[in-house]
Length: 295
Image (cartoon, rainbow, N blue to C red; front, side):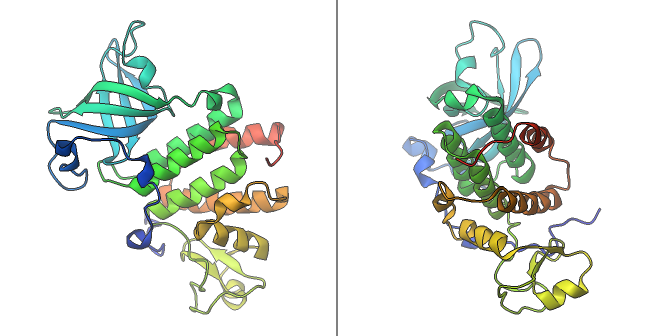
């Protein structure tokens, strides 16, 4: 299968790292062991969020964590399925946790864990849990293992914290989805036509995902694979892209607009992952049967 990475801009070098405030407190030894393309000491400390876990052996769990300094990593948490485990309560999905990990021959081992933010409120409703599951699945599918991506980690933590504090999950999710696309190098071009290079003006523009972004009305008419995109949706995506997504909270945004932006971003995400997004499918079914209000 031809990868959809072809045609999608890769602007990782221009993406600002706004998530540095989520970095963990590390020792001088830890600080000298960056997580990307350099050797790590046998013990390394980082801050992370469990985005996936599965049972392993009789009492262990295999965790996938999105971390601040080491990107996406896998580590074994021994004995955490036992009732009296001291680690188990600190390694719950979606909680923000400081961990000390030992480098293993085949699998790294979690030796210490201390929860920073348990995200208790997030777990109170099925909807917020599904949103957290959706973002975790995106992080797992889009991010490269053992490659530092502080911007992606910050995007995940900001989204989880946002719904923990009761902010609108739909707007939060659109921001998080865009930031994940950006962190992985898949953000669509929104300013220039990907067909002819002309600057996009208000009008009957389109979105050509395979080409990597928006197309002008003339190119849209010639490209059967492009889809309509409204001027309002384009403005909302541009606001998110330039870092003003938080200003959308509390705005009177129509459900039609929110759904269009959602469909646009999810189409981009499916093209980038080339996979079905299972958590989103379940979330969409819930939202269709139990619609929520914005805010």
